[in-house]
Length: 590
Image (cartoon, rainbow, N blue to C red; front, side):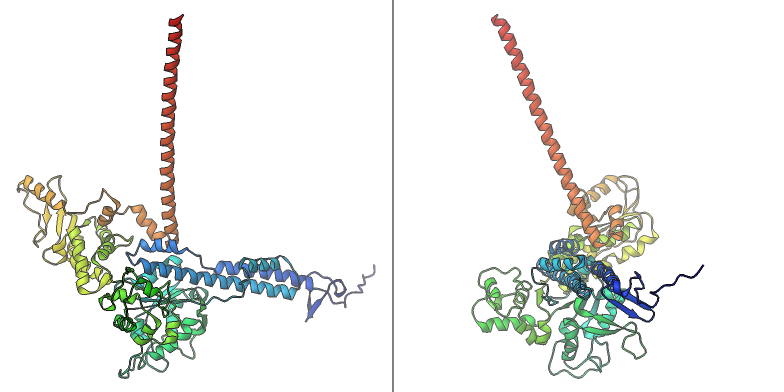
């Protein structure tokens, strides 16, 4: 049998579909391989699907500003204006990041479709994307970084940190005072990105969606007449200049490890377009600059006047918190009210470069915390300090109780020291130090009671010992040692003393706010708060609230149904009675 002879062995054909050059529109040939236009179109479709899927996977899950504020309210007391401003800024920033990802993906799809020369399904998707954006597909949204003004201990850092935790994005805090311009000893600005990369576990894509908080930004303000320092530039202007491109958005070379760049060091390239920069500082003395400007302008200053100020940084970001519409003289305004009227010119006079201020369009001022705010911070947030220490004592089997006057004393001490919320933990540590030293070696203590005298250091904490009902002893009432009291004391006198003390204690039972102070958190809530992510935790809370509302509605509907049934039964009973009377009357008539 003779061999089969093929007359097409030398004819070029597609290596994938085996079609010859005459059977396709175009055939791209290479070294021992070729591909036709139909197979290229199939590859384009596959790549387009991958592009869209990748953009969806890299997008940040958005949370509405109202839900962000609701989440912040669980951890942070007060500062409602700052919460709202920061929530809107974070939401718009990540919406912008997601839009850029989607725009880039659809642009790649359109480019591939153009190369393919077809109007397939992917091309229709790209056209529908432009339709949804209302013809704004080519508009590029600029980045809006945030500047937080306020005294120390008002929650600037914690606000940014809590929002980053909720959004599940990498977060890092950098001290601006340690940054230097090139050529000086210290950290250069790329070190900030290196820390963010470390927070993202080396994932460059996640790091490019992170949040950087630059603390003490007011300390690098341009000042005249300072001596030259080896650890930073002379005026701070060099650091601001170095930060300009980084904050605005650029591609920077970042060392993976090490404090400074080295030639033999591994480096990666990071795009800072998607990184949100939040700068914070106390800006001591800025209120005097604002007062001088307002006084020089003449006339009284009020809420409406601040809105008419043409130099305002951001009417949505800078608000007159607590200001009335009545006229007020700048000399009579408090520092917090003055900070609400800050303008770019004021920040420039303080020492920030106009270019640097222009890259921080969202500005909000945090108000100093009052005693009521500090007392609420101790007990109300989900992660309140009192709850933390009560959990530590609960691990030893001891209940920790704070009286109302103890909480007030802690708040007053923090205000006297000028440390704000940051100093609350120090005060509590000092008040609880002796108890935390003694408790691990004792198993007879049932409760530890902290009052105002304990906070002020006048006496030691009172310890209620375990024992029979009505015979519980106390130790440490007046600074005595932890010996158990004599059992022969009059029982009635001890009970009367205990009842008198308990009148001033905040106990669990009547309201949710009271239970916060005793800190008896159910074990299930403690476990869930340790396992769930912040967004899942918020969704779980919303689900619980929806379930409670649904149960209340069902109970109300059931009650209405029972009332309707009772009314129907009464009506039927009346009708039966009337019918019986009518029958009886008819029979009597006959």
